[in-house]
Image (cartoon, rainbow, N blue to C red; front, side):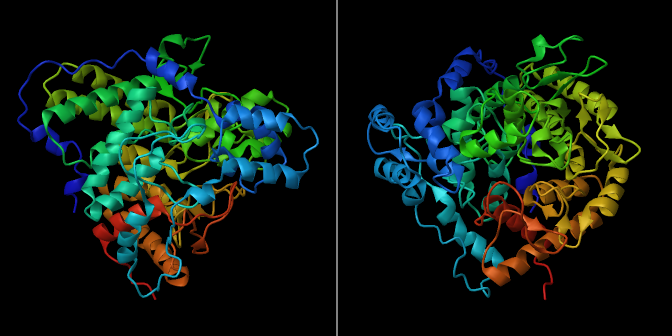
Length: 541
């Protein structure tokens, strides 16, 4: 069962002859320019977009951001501007007459509705892959959707497009169910996006291009069975380009200017990374919510917007990790936080690139290994909280490590940054502070935000389970896996659904956040199926 998790281990055994070196990553200027040229719905429809969102013509802000115009966008906008006295019902009718709404465009998705609970959950998951798989996208004029060349899996519900970090956890299950073709197809889609934009966007919508998400493409590539030299060379070049995106601000940081884009200079001069977004405007998909949040803050609107966007890049949108005041989303300060999970993943990427360089007989291995080792030393110095026995985030504004323990503490164990140095302490902390009846808590703080207690999320269960297993804590890994599987199976038997998140304290579907609970659900399906493959079905009453 662990063969498909071996990643690059098999690559190194391939007898690959040395030949011409893989081309270095292309200069990012073209890709940067391409990303900057992307037109979002707010930019395209201006006053119409803002009116629809701020007047809440549709319950979900994402609905209009995903709508497709039925005719020329400029003509629609001109007709809207010809009147100044639109009532809400009239504006809604105008939109419905001139746009195809995403609910109408989406293929039918049973997603468990009506599923008989006697159908085993693993069989149910296997049946869902076809319902969550979409054909290659050819972008329609005026649409926010980004074209990709191959099939892909969507999370489900309101998430109708391909998402970056979701996809790794989703593919764990697709791989376990024998869908190697989907693994290869989605890797090709992400490589296409890197080639076009210089990075993997948050998701395949124009309004997502200004940011990425946790860098897990190298992990997806580790699920691939392809070992031919041409494929390996292309993928190495892709990872180099993605790494260059995350390090783009490095030449601009100094003792006086501590941060630039994603790059942060720590007090001793070492380099780590943060989440960041190129734009400082309200998110198109949450426009009204962001405007209202900024109004509650005394800071400049554009800084609040950038911090909201950076939190969206983290995947933890939203969480007390990013808040100066746990009770106020408007206190968000994501760009002032140096997150341990991001830096652990970048360490994993750098080591993965180094191994690929070695396997291909190239001379780039020493450079990327040196970067990885420098990052490891910086993480150990600045992101290890000895008093708590946990890895944690660094607060740039306050010049201190964050005191709270979160599930992100398991990332260094998962990516190999910590192979045992602090693993015993981390395991003890996880068991005593984060383990709940239904799995692993995200944090210990209840804020009403979805990436806080009492919620537990499938990807964080996987990170912890695998990280603990790899560092000699198999019993605790099994306990977390069994508790989470029990939670998923109980809810499935009650409702016929797998959902986005779970309340692991009361062992029920989760809550909180900007939108209603979603079912489907890509990464829950993937992690559940992978954990069943590793640990079997739990004994659930």
